Image 1 (cartoon, rainbow, N blue to C red):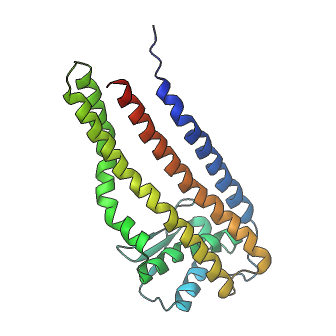
Image 2 (cartoon, helix red, strand yellow; image 1 turned 120 degrees about the vertical axis):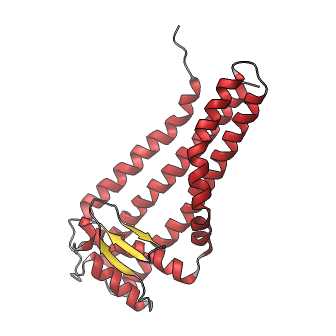
Image 3 (cartoon, rainbow, N blue to C red; image 1 turned 90 degrees about the vertical axis):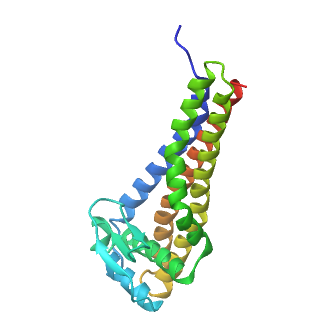
Length: 232
């Protein structure tokens, strides 16, 4: 007989929502990357204008290959903008560039959720890599009837729970950066009122991908607990 592990079903809502979030960002980015920004400002220029308005002069703007590979590296104080953002003068490009500068402003102002997230990255990277291997070792040991198997499984669950903290704290960081981006785009005269809604849609869709990641991580933790419950 083929063994069916019903706990895989726990992951289905996260998989469905992840597909939805990804399709949402792809659709909105595709639409608004073809809508010219009336100000004629490129993503890189928008980033520079917003930094100048906020008296930030120690952060570099670089071009990086790929699509939607934009990010801010606080270690080197560098904002890296992708092919469709750096030189493009679209509603999508300036919105994404402004979002990354939102992280720069967070960094400059000592925004606590960002500081906390950056501080726990080494720990959460380690625990996320260790969690499932430790958990699977626990399953194997418990299959031989050893009580230590359950203890090892619990250690794996704790490791994954620690890693989940990173996903949770990322949500306010990303939503706050998007909120700052819309404010800066408007105050700096980069977008008009009619373009504001499009910028919000692009950033809102991008934020949904982080929600999807958090949901998937939470469901994975719930699945581990369900598997552990069967072996008590």
